[in-house]
Structure formats: structure tokens, C-alpha cells
Image (cartoon, rainbow, N blue to C red; front, side, top):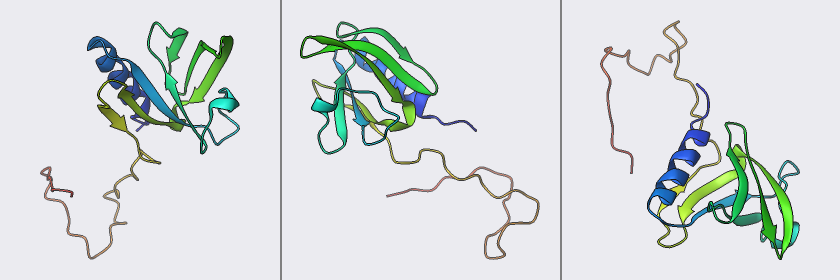
Length: 132
């Protein structure tokens, strides 16, 4: 399956905006594939205000996020691969979502016999377990 991150980013962004809060994104800016103002990067990360009033042409795509905004009075084009988004949250109360390094879990073993012998066969019924 495709990554759930772009869908979750869009959903949390919309939820924050719908509640009249200011959406912010924490971005991993350590890679060369990120286009952000370097003077605002701290410890390889940058926090971006992505409120509708603060940005123009916001595109929350499946592969990347782009928009234009002013930094220190100068307009800049921002480009961030979605996999570089570490969190989307409300500035006012901090509610939102943080993402792990890899939100794509490894696929479950197929029924083609590559299941280790120590793992019981599935009964065909879904199961849940508590993760702490």
C-alpha cells in the first residue's frame, strides 16, 4: 500500500484549520531535497507556519508539499517531500500528530509458506492487541 503520511498530513492540517487554530509543521531539513530558508533551520529542523493567511499556493500533495511564504520580509518558495514532515500540530495547544521515521510497516508474510514455523497460522479472523 502507499504511504499514509500524505493523507494524515492533510487531515490534521484541515482539522487544525477547521478549529480556527494555526497549523504548524515540523520538518526534517537535513536533506538536500528540502527547499527552506536555511537561516531558520535549527538542529536540522525547521518549524513552518502553514496557516492559510501565512502562505500562498499551498499544495499538500502525495509526494511533496509546496507553497510560497515570506521569511524576514522576503518571499521564498518552499518545497518539502512529504516524508520529511515530522509533525503537524496546532500552535495554540500543541495537539496534532508526530510521525515516525518510517510510517510504512513491512508487509505481512504471504500465505505462500514463507511464515516461520514459530508463528501460528491465522484463523482468518482479525485480531487486536494492546501496544504500550
